[in-house]
Image (cartoon, rainbow, N blue to C red; front, side, top):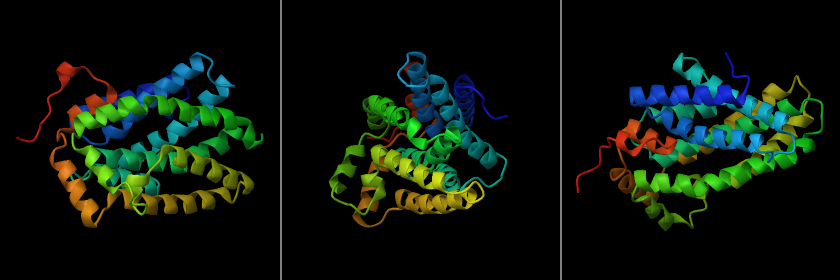
Length: 262
């Protein structure tokens, strides 16, 4: 059953995290990060950070259910959207960086799902009505950035080597920006809002195809960047369960991480 409240979303994410730790599955990486964001949004609603708290909860639930449904489809052997399928397929592989795994989930969820959710929660009301609260989500995410980066550096000690490629404007892995993704989601929502109800599924499918292509640029590297990601990966923690606990904020004594030999 889909979640109907943000509390149910949090519970569903905790179930995925628990199951992923038990199965030592990389599918829990994104769920752990998303749980952190969802709890912060929940706190923001409770403390009146949004103009319309109940509407923001509806947006959050609709938004989260798209991920939860995609995850459920994948686990059942069904076909989720192409962008989510790429993220889940990549989670089955040991080669990609933890950062790549997280960015693929973020790309599918923000670049595709967020725009769809914004239109759905707006209904027949002007999309602009939710713009301020939509932007407030970015403020909340930004407040978590330092903590998440610290977690990633702990998991992936040589991650800063990717900075050597800062000028590579052709690499989505290097240039990915949550701000840009959110702005793109808003533009997509505006485009979707202009379509008739009957035409929206085709618009969503077209967007999904484009985000899938974007995702392949995150998942697949070449040249010197490929070598750099290989070196970074060589020194990353290897046990998914421990990585999930770090991203989720688990207790340190639970960490049993397989680190490379010096």
